[in-house]
Length: 80
Image (cartoon, rainbow, N blue to C red; front, side):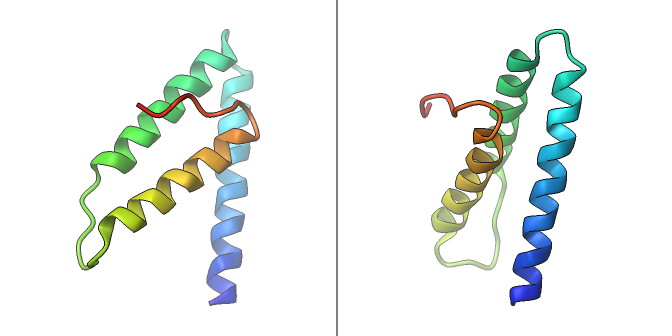
């Protein structure tokens, strides 16, 4: 389990770095980050999760993870 957690953290760091790199190449990096974060959050809200009794808990954890990744670059916008 610790190995899986370590790999997930490594993936999060990699993805955060890629997002930051792409944002830095944009004319308006803050707008890009805001739009990208909102798109990712919409995907998390709409994704179908099978095989779990408490899918809302999984969804909430996924949204918190997205917010953590983006919080290093820009504070999260108010909940919609």
